[in-house]
Image (cartoon, rainbow, N blue to C red; front, side, top):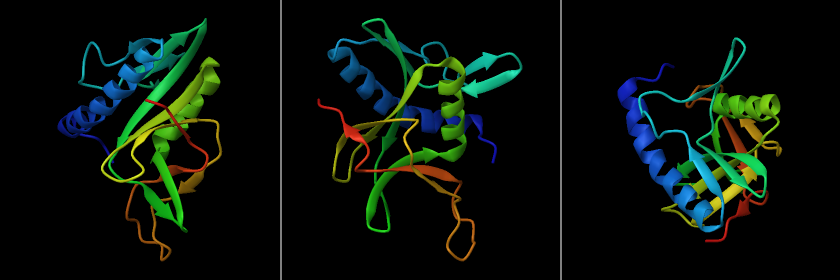
Length: 161
């Protein structure tokens, strides 16, 4: 499904609030940050390598000579699957982020800002951690959502404020 420019801007505005919260927290913890949406909000920034193109993570952070990518996601609810609490992202983007980490050799962390439903807080997980793929279909095979990738709540780490 193609993303319209207006839809992208609406989603970006919602997500940027979470990204700002993550960036502020990382600054408080002594990190230097390079946010990627500082020049234009019209399109998602890309990492280019030869004839390949990858969706770029939101932030590049630096501390003690180490560089890390951060992809921030703002969430209003948790996913409950088989009595397990999970959080996650679009599977297509998950694949891009895994490729970015592999191609660059830079660690990439997913950081989720969860609000409106307990447990609230900021949680992080390395993109390399195992999770659960969902094809977006009901058990009867009806397509109800785009494919997603989820991580178990017990695997993610809460970031202290």
